[in-house]
Image (cartoon, rainbow, N blue to C red; front, side):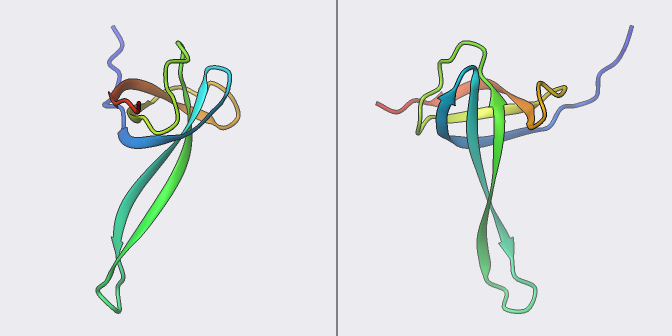
Length: 85
């Protein structure tokens, strides 16, 4: 029996759904500037596997880290938290 480690999860917003079975998810977080003590918003875009092609632009989704699906795709959509109308 193999024990799999805890997988990383992120919550972000879908910014592109033009690829087949793939969405681009933008994950934002705040970073505190060391000198000025001001919070700066930073974001990272991840390509995530969407097996059912159910995500649309603007949806808030939870993604989970998986084995590499392709050169740039290492995440998969776990669930859709909020849908856009």
